[in-house]
Length: 384
Image: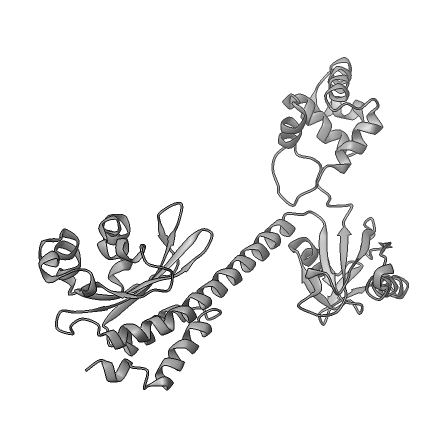
């Protein structure tokens, strides 16, 4: 009774299932719908798509909540006794099998995995196999039937075998896209840790991407602002200079070059230091937009964080007192004022400064301050 519904005669139904596989590559909940369609096509009552970490041995990915194989009892215990998977893993990738081809009724009646786990849930018959093996994951698909529904027929197994390559390709695309998204997310997190603003824009200043520090700077509208998705300077002179730099960075071809610009602020605070550098159209960063872009780096001298004491202790092996002195010097403090602020005698402060110079391999106070200024600045906050 299942053959007519699942045989190659119903090509339209098969095409719909294949389409569902590829739609699931980008759909938020696509795999649940794709597996449901596969189960319906093959006349089953449940099924799953499981991803097994090849090194960790742990299941992960998107098992269907309704699936028995997604239950904790299977994931934490019974998966090690799944004799069906043991058979599957001896088959080539893409080879689909039916459990009744390998396990007779007498075996099933005496096997603990069947009798204690599968049969009580009426998961008597299964058809499936491995559809993808990647560097770190193996993907399994299975469709299940109860004892009342009976085993899978050869024609139905043939349909599943016909679908397996499509499912494997869709899963590989899904995995590749997930990896790209993960890399993008990691880069986004990293950029948001920077204390300086980072803005990617085209020749007209239209923003493609920006980090959190840039959002704060533009939202303040203090010399730089975001107007209808475009970065704009507050004064005509700087606006003209900014557009010139963006044009040179995006239309120079192999000779594209960037530049720097000081942007005054109506608030009277120290000007922003803005640098523009090219991102050519052929670079990976521009491939999605198919046009050259530029990277703008904006430094706010008023908010550039001084090196945290803990970082200096880790980097140079300073004592807490030496690190505190270094932080004060990086902020522009004078030795006399630092001594008075912390109630320390001048000979002690000078002794700490000599230790600082020695441990940082610098020779003068100005050289030390220059070194501290060049340390990577992050948006992280902490106590010196």
